[in-house]
Image (tube, rainbow, N blue to C red):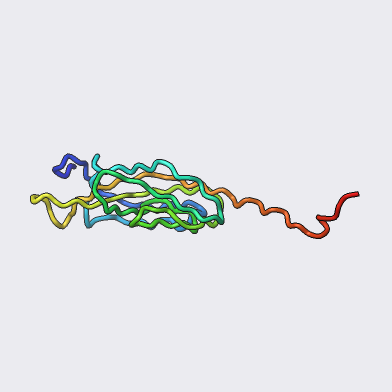
Length: 156
């Protein structure tokens, strides 16, 4: 089905995914109060994320272009690593990953456009894109050996 602007309109259902130690899995939900229009006017440019290290602060900005801001970002599938969250207004993944591992999730960026006069105002036109991303979290580095008086004794 199309929305009159040449974009394909699809109903989006979110599916719960069990992904081990990657934080909380998304709950199932069905979006019924508006339509999603996937067209060429919005691009999610982030294709990969920089790696993280367990126990160290992490931040990565997601990038979109095309439709005018403001953008709304959210995780619509999978789960972020425990200790990492998404700032939905700024499109920034941030936090301190709690454990090593590989977490796969789906990010959505969306922006609302004004409706044309002949469209149903109860179903606003939403331009949105999704992309599956993976955040690799390395284990924390081994601590340096502790210096003790015995370790400082000169050898004969």
